[in-house]
Length: 622
Image (cartoon, rainbow, N blue to C red):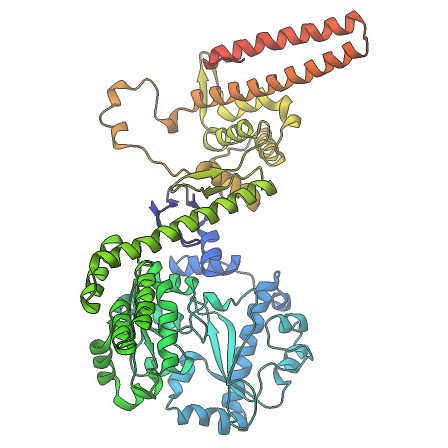
């Protein structure tokens, strides 16, 4: 199966999934792995979390040992951080519901905002007391690491609480895990920002998180649109009013990662902003990024002085939904309206606004959709459609050219650094659609092919004449003596690993390597087994009568013979070169005739063997 990669920005699908092998591989960015790796990478889960997630999803019962005191000290810092965040969440909730200040200050604030108890529980809201060290002191007393508390931003450099005298809004990832916190100041007399957030950590990257998405994702799929607002309280009020498909960018400028999060559930975004100039500017700022991801975006500007929280409480859910339906405007129409309203008879200002619209049009990747918008824009602005089209194409051409140059420079820089010879990198080159592959050193290509043969065909039967054995035993018997001379240590390690398994009389399939516990071995196996290609329909229909060999998947004898011959040819060439160097050194040192004749004899035998192998390969060696 093939689709767009979720790990990098691309327009042409290069992300493949092999259900039979249970692996994925992107031939654009190079990422690959199995189902567990995918959840860890895509959802930001730890290994145990990914296993539990899969078990829960597919109703698989897993057995876990009892959680002892050692469990709280966990094996990884990431898991420890998650436990500390969970502890902080419980602490802030306890402060809100079970302390006098929490009830009189924190709960009173939420009550004044009209937030119901069930909504407080739903969003796990809390309170941080003015004490200043309540969380830090109790966490340390329970044995939690002060260093991790600092890394999470819960404790400042003076070992005091980062959040104090504020109501707390926990921030969850898409699976519902608490990854960070936001605190709102309650006192109007104190200096400082109204909202503060946890600093970024291994758990929290603000550009990759949307507030409320863990609760909204099902509703977004159902409604096939995501409402995007700015603030935490906006999300809470709308959800409480029955509008579930809403998330917030948490006060940050909208990012590509956040847009891709939404795109998982719907290709449609409705951006809801305040109607003042700041709201208009915020709305326009993120639109081009949304369009570039081939998503449909509409804007709704609220009446002046209103925000989603205040307006839904003012008019009610039904009227609010009706307002969204009647006021939603696509970005091109919205900008065209701004041109008419703001430029008036000022040609310079109008030209600048029109150029801004052209920049937006150029972000639309779908040519048909872009063409329709250009036509509509020309009608709205009473401008020549051909002129708008030409200007848009200029912007597109410039962007494509700049992107090619930038990619080409990245590839050249990567090649200059040398990269990892064991893992050839694939990058777009300066020409559209081209791929530049990092050069492999020495005999690595042949060594890699030997490893591929072992992984894909090693467990299959090798039968030729009277000889019948496994492909792996046949291949390893021939190359065993050359293993110390392998140029790539990783490939040598994998052949040696295979040899050990054979000597232990263990049956090995490709799954052994594809799901190996060593991530380095696993990644090599995935890179070797995954392919961006599939069989043509003609393979089984039109040309079936012309076949002279089995299907590629069942052609292990010819594959292994060819791979071995090419491997041996490379090694013999190297031996020829080394023998020639030795011969020249002996001649320069006036060595005896016997020594020189010995190397001449070796040289002759090597050349004869080389010609023999070349003939079998139907090739010529110069």
